[in-house]
Length: 148
Image (cartoon, rainbow, N blue to C red; front, side, top):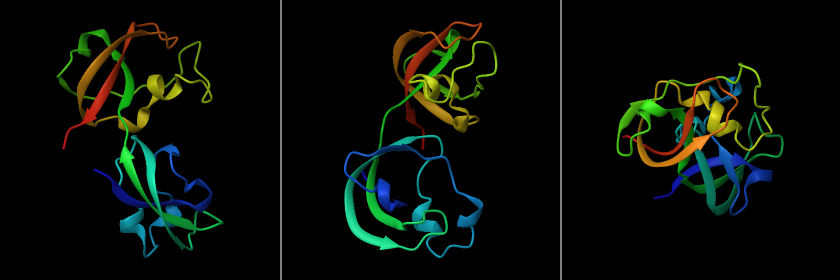
């Protein structure tokens, strides 16, 4: 099922994927706040339809376009003891501060260091296997589903 939201005009293209990180301080007074912020913080989305309507936006210089998006499966690195398919867990959140930290451009960064989900209840849909995040403890990569 797709959701309607607003994203920057330059990002409004079919297949564009992004992580929704929440609102900016400038968003609080915007008349389109409720439409713009309908997504789950910390989850990734893909644009499946661009509606062609653009609005002025205090965050995006070129304006914000109305799009339809679908929520993508989310991968996360968790401790081995929690990595049980079908289990519902509360995400602890992890910061990449222990050596060697992963730089934000690393492909594994969001899998290993997604702190946006801290405190969120999720279901483990699939256990993928061990992942090297540079952490001291052994971490397992899993695919998550939202728990409504």
